[in-house]
Image (cartoon, rainbow, N blue to C red; front, side):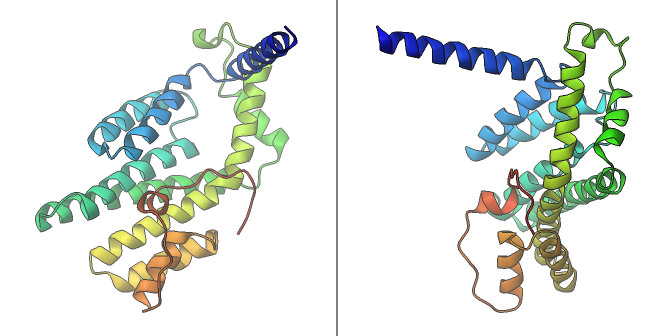
Length: 242
């Protein structure tokens, strides 16, 4: 009986916690975040075509939601799309013409992710929390019908937390975009440009395994073992590091 009571308390606590956390989600983009989780699963299973279609749906949600179309989330979408095209080019086609076409598609998306990340950092990196909060409130108009039944202050505070965390994560994500660009440049026979991209990547995050391994390869050094997906897709970290 005691164990049952403790189990019930644990379940109730978990339910209350997740209810509280869900109440802080911006309802306008909640669907995009759920779809992004599905995308990660599809990529892990090697279902790149389905994943790319899902990214289109995710992008449409962010593009049509105020203040998200130029936020760091768009950089994530572009990098993920570029990484998917890159993986297809390198590991899922034996046709040299198709490989070249996929590399062009990948490069376009990776460059878009770099522009997005750099633009976002230029705007938000030096902002204080009060400045970010002021910016966020402009993105949550009270007259928006989708925001009519939310805990307004809780949702605003969560978005501020997300942007503060993004200030830590975005340099690493930008580093991954630069390393992906370097991989593309290397396979497009732009070796000098690839080296410069890897160097930029390592300046942003000196533990970037993809940049390290590919730079070592170009310089004739021994590469370190690392899974393909971990090299192509950015990590989700919570603490700043170089």
